[in-house]
Length: 316
View (cartoon, rainbow, N blue to C red):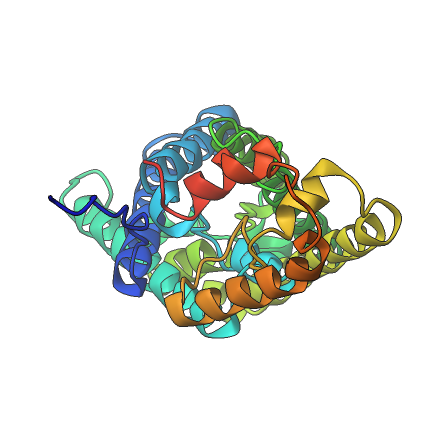
């Protein structure tokens, strides 16, 4: 007799694969956003630039989201960290990958600009799309205004990302479109104010190839979006705490505690730790099942969690 074939667990992408996906997605976003911005007229016609960048975010999430979760933005990564969806070590690695990919994307566009005869000064061309405030903003928006818009915009973007990918009823196929459309709207708003990217990695990449004023003001485009992302992550975590306190009997929360791990965005797949967490969660549930002849079936949401599978790399 032949022994039955044992099912093997779904393959989880390794850290190298996830970092590569983050770098490639970030590079793709910067290439399109910066390229369209330079070779069009972002001040006179901001819609094509905002639309191109937002659609690229959607495409990148669809292409690489099943591997890494589709952050491509340090603000989104920080929001996920504060919300408890990614571990600190993985978050730092994600940030480094996003920076590397963004700088490589900007370097590719810089090379293309140097091959265009009508563009005599490549740095001046990058100045057109570099984020800035005061005299370096199209509307001469002062620092306080740019700071407020970056904080608010990053907070809204992170809130959309967390909300679109959270819970057992999240639709993974729609999350990239929600985030991409949010990006379009925010970029349309921030374009005239000062080329606000709501993405520290993209701002850094553009500043590297622009005039010195872009580097000098780069701090604002790190501090403001990260602050907004942290606020959104804290609010989202607070909502989760309230839900656990007031709705412990809901199907979503019952399913969320079946395996004892951060299902939605456990981007740092540690098999040893997850196995320990899963065993601990099952041990806690064991006393409730000892005297049950026919235990209740696991909720369907727990058995087939599309949102978790998509963003943990089990579907693609």
